[in-house]
Image (tube, rainbow, N blue to C red):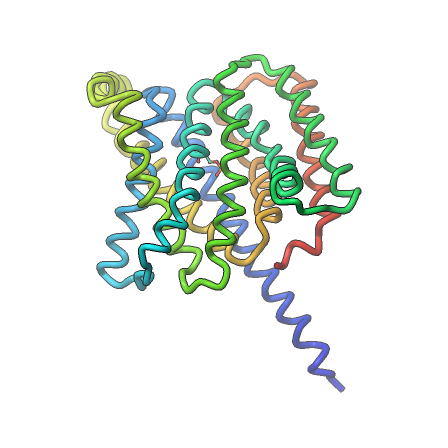
Length: 316
Ligand code: 3PG
């Protein structure tokens, strides 16, 4: 006879895992498309501050329209909510611009190899700034992540300091963003999807004046003309694709973050980078040396080991 008391939590657990797996697969697929169009745009139009702003603008517009037409129910927020969201939006803005600036200077694969170190940043921030402790196995599994990333960085053929630092800054900023987003979403009526929408809107407000100060309309107009004359009208579609896919992959990632711990999020994000690294190397014909690939492989393997050590964190 079926013992429903035992079966039910197990079934719920399996359903939860299936839901998160579907979120993860969608997040990764949308992210690959974003990365390809983002790099195609940056190759022709090297203005990462504007492309970052457009990504946030597209997301804000999509969500404002879906609230106005009631496709999605608008969240009920108060001033307190926006105040608490402000530092999260600052971290999101910094992490986003830094990653995009990085990708404008180096191969997409290089940015993502460095960004595969995010779980190590997550553990270090949680340990040293929040005082959380982890089992020794967790710290040990970070060694291949850090070692692999370092090996990949020092053997990178097209190493560029801005590209490297951008990816490192992005790692740090996104760890703060994830930890504080999770705290902000916990016990609140705002869903992951709406939380990310508010984050986009606030980040857009923060980023716009900086984008104008760093690059500005004059540069953009001249660059836009050049890109249009080189690529043709398709260039506009590339910009639209990178902006829209940016919003949707982040939206799905926040729907996952709503269900999992920030640490699991970082692991999922690193695993995502395998598909981004492989697909961008193929599409952009990025030259890779065997030792460089070995470094990336060790880092990714480290993340896999880390996820095994932490498998209980997968359902939070
Ligand atoms: C960005 O532009 O925000 C980065 O490309 C995103 O980095 P992620 O892969 O960590 O989301």
